[in-house]
Image 1 (tube, rainbow, N blue to C red):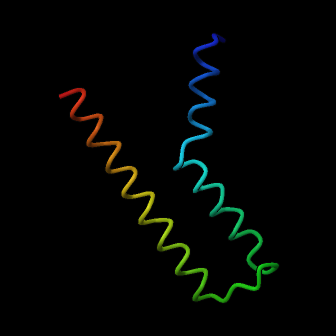
Image 2 (image 1 turned 60 degrees about the vertical axis):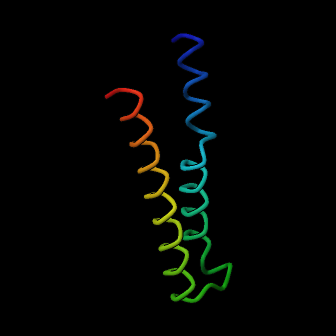
Length: 68
C-alpha cells in the first residue's frame, strides 16, 4: 500500500460528511444517556440527512464540472 493511499484514507476519515455520520451514530447510540425525546431524535435525523444530502449534491456538482 502506498503513501498516497493512506493520505487519501486519512482525508476521507476527516471529511465533514464522515464526521457528521460518526456524530449521528454516536448520538443515536447514546440517546438514552442524553435523555433525548423521540421528537429530538427525529429533528436531529432530519438535520443530519439534509446536511448530508446538500454536501453530496455539492460534491456531485463539483465532480461533474471537473469531468464533463
